[in-house]
Structures are given as C-alpha cells and as structure tokens.
Image 1 (cartoon, rainbow, N blue to C red):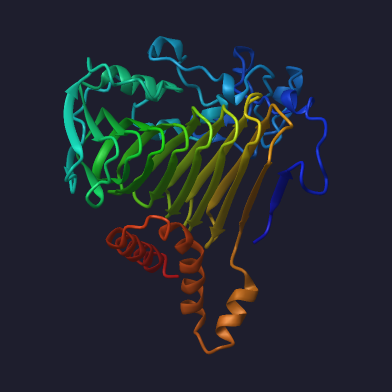
Image 2: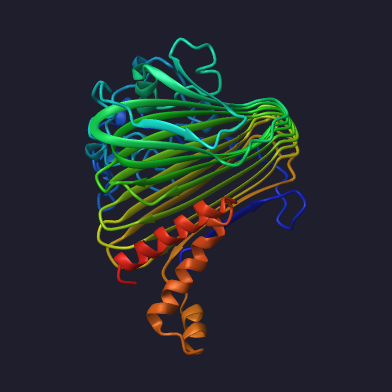
Length: 442
C-alpha cells in the first residue's frame, strides 16, 4: 500500500521521547471558532480539497495538519463539550472539526429537524439467562454510561420515548449470542436508545444487527462491569437509502475485557462514533472495524479511546475497501492518554484499499499524550491500491487475475471478520463481502 504514515512513542524503544511538554499544545486540535465561519474550503457537502488556503491565513489562524481546519489550542479531545441539553450544541455548519468530512445535506434533517419519526423495531433473541426490558426515558439507569458529545446525539437523547435495556447479570455467562435485531421500515427522522450492561464478572457477546430502511439518530450506552468480558458487534447492512448516525459509548471497569466490532456495508450514509472510556485500572479494550463502500456511499467512523486511569491497554484495528465513483470512507481515530494514565499501552491502525478510480478515503489517526510515563503508544495509517507483488505471486501460480484480486481483498478483510467469533455471523458477512466484490465486477 502507498501513502503510509507511522508514529510510535515508547520509552522502551529507540527514538525515546523524554520531554512531552510541547505535545500538549501541538495535539490540541478542535473545532473552528465563530470567527472562522467564512473560511473557504468547507461546505455542507464536507471538506473541499480543491479550495485554496487564503481564508484561514487572512484570519491569522494556523492550519490543522491534515486540512484547512484552524487549530483551537483549548479544544483537546478530552475537553470536547458533553451535554444532554441540545441547546448546548450550536447548529452545524460543516466547519466543525467533528463534521468537516460529513455531507450534512445527506443527513436528511437529523441535525436540524425534530426527530418525531417511528424508531426501528427492536427484537432480542438468544437472550436465555440475560434480562431484556423496554423502559421509558425516566428510568434512572439511562444516561449513566454516556453523555452526548455532538448535536445529533443530543437530539436523539431528547427525542426518544422508550429504550431497550439488556442486562447480563453478575457472574453470568450468557447462553449463546444475544442477537439484537434493529429493523427499519420508515424514512422519517427518528431517535433510538439502547443500553447494554454487563455486570461484574459476567461474560457475553451482543450483536446489534441493523437492517431495513431508516433515517436514524441512535445512542447506544455500554457498561462493562469490573472483571466482566463483553463483546459488542454492530453490523450495518441497511438498505441503500438508509441514513444512520450512531453514538456507541462504553465505560470499562476494573480488570474488564471489552471488544467492540463495527461492520458497515449497507446504507447511503452511515456515521458511527464508538468510544471506550477506562474508569479503573487493569482493563483491556480491543476495537475492530470493517467497512466496504460502493459508488455514492458515505461510511464514516470516528472513534475515541480515553485512557483516563493508569495501567490499561487498548488496540484498534480498522480496515476498509472502496469501489465506484464517489465512494467515500472516513476514519478518525482519537486516542487520549490523560496525565493520570501512567503505564498505558496503546496502538491504533487503519488500512484502506481503493479498488477503483473515483473513490476517496480519509484516514486521520490522532494521539494525544499528557504523560511520558507510559508503556507504549503509537499509530499507523495507510491508503493505497492492490499490492502488485501479491497479485503477481497468485497469478504466477495459475490463478486468473480477477480471482487473484478477490483473494487479496478477502484476505485483507478477513482479519476483522474473524474477530467476531460468531460462526454464523462470520459466514454471513463473508458472503456479503463476496456480493460487494461481485457488484463491483472485481
């Protein structure tokens, strides 16, 4: 693959960083101020790569290292606004750092309109010894694991009428996978709320399976109790016209193990913002993602790993493939290591495979470090086309070029599919990838 960047910071490796004092200011990148409202290069269709840089220079603002967005030193990823009050989030313009890649006009009113549509139906199967409840918004458990970080999430919080609560009781091993089918059948802008709570020393796999047609703003709260082991898989196989914006926030307890897997294949516009926040020491988080964008699709993932306490470990691996005109994927990976988070061990990777002309992938790894007393921290990002050596190797052994290309793509994406550990779902998603390849005549 071409266009590779790699950064690693570790006190145990060559190139040791002994003074991180200046990283605090360099890493504090955020949304434009109100004075930047006239900056060229941003529209409701997202960031314009063809615009010149004159606007921000005239304002005396420094540019972001990966675009035209100005630097706002006080806007650390750890200082982003969080609120249940929609009024605390200004109307979106497309200038905001968090929204600069998102085509706002294609949100179909999720950021502007009242979310009065009918939410997708939720059906939970395979629960066995797991508790499933439908509760109204007054339930005291709601809002304890997550606070909205953007306008759409806040709008969803204020609009939902009831919520689905899934509880894995203390010291319980769930009987098989908990399948949560979220099925849309209407296009009106709607809100939805789901809470998943794995109590102390429990173990479960929960699959959120999204299908049908929707215009949906969704909040998913996840609590991983002390010593619990929880895997949450979020599959987006929507119909071609679906619009889905989902905040999936997890709080991870002491010595807990949490795995989050995103698979986005369907929909017109899908924007997920998964986050993992460590609340006590000794925990481990793995976050995986797979996305395959066809012509005209916009698939966006913006994730956060918040190392707020000492001696925790995280690994992030996201992989995407794109084919067709105007296929667009976005991956933004924020890892925040706070001052108190000594002994942190973290690494994030994003890889994108562009299969045809006319597709675009944006990949932005961000690493913010407030302490030098860590085990290791790094990130890597690469976007490119097929590896000619891989193709040559396969073709030299008698495999036709078309079949060889498919083998390369399968091998590229299989790493993520295999992390799901649900055989029936892995088989289904592998078949879905095959259909994507066939649709692109690859």
